[in-house]
Length: 154
Image (tube, rainbow, N blue to C red; front, side, top):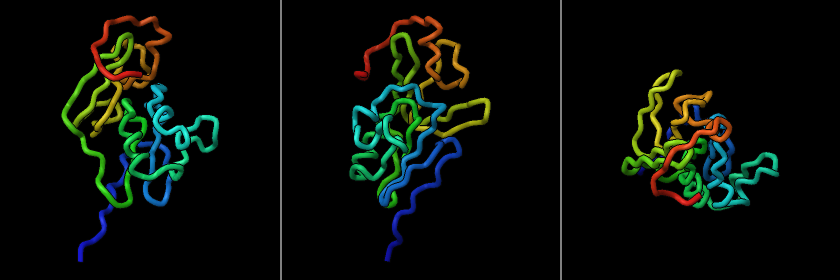
C-alpha cells in the first residue's frame, strides 16, 4: 500500500501560513509588489478588506494553487496536502516596462541572506529596492523608466 504524498516543508522565506483542509498558502509580504494577480484571480480567497486577507478554504484547493502560481513575484506559495507540488516549468524572463524582471523557472537566487531555490521572482532592475535582489516596488517612487518586452497582461 502506498503512502499519501507528503508536501515538502516550506522554505524559510515563504512567510505567513494560511491553512485550509486541503492546502496551505504562504505569503511573504516583503516579496509582494501588489501586481494583484491573486486578487483578480480569486477575490473570494484573496481579499485585502478581510482579516485574515487570505481565506484559503474559500475555493477548491486546485483553483487556489493555480492562482498562486500566477503570482509573478514569488510572494505567494502553496503546498497541497495531497497532490503535486509546484513545478518550475521552462525558464522565462520577462522585462516589465518601467519595472522589474519577472523570472520563472528552476531558479537559484544568490541573495545577501543566502542562496534561495525558487520558481518565481520579481528582480529589481532600478537599483532602488531595499530588498535586493528582489523588487520592492521602489521603481514607482524613484522615477525609473526603461522599456519592457512583451509579456503578461496586468
